[in-house]
Amino acid sequence: MPPKPSTSWRAGTRGALYVGRTTNLIWRTWQHRTGAMRGYTRRYAIKQLVWFEWHEGFETAARREYLLKRWRRAWKINLIEEMNPGWKDLWFDIRGDFDEAAPVLASVPEF
Image (cartoon, rainbow, N blue to C red; front, side, top):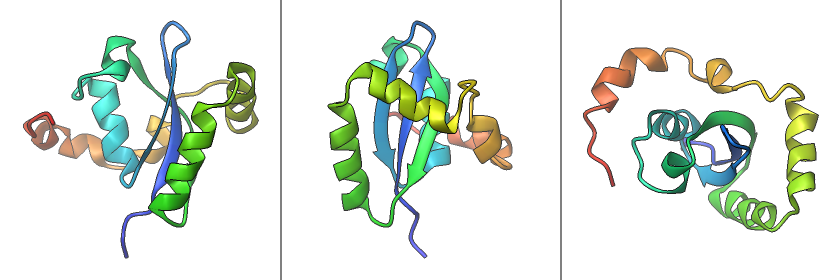
């Protein structure tokens, strides 16, 4: 069975938000948490996974991401707070035994 695509929101320390899509939510979240990827999320210290949803296909996830990026900030915050009122970091709920793999994954080169 292929990985299930997802759309997710991440939050930074100064209120910055990031929405993205992936077929591997755990791996992608780990990349953001550790700063393994250069760019917006590393620059603004966006490390917390605060919202996500699953999609049946990558096209659906891409469409949803496109729409969410155009929402007003207040709408984005309302969406996050419907699922996660305390803005809890959901990493600890989704990771499973991923921490055991982290030393191996840390050696993977940047893209």
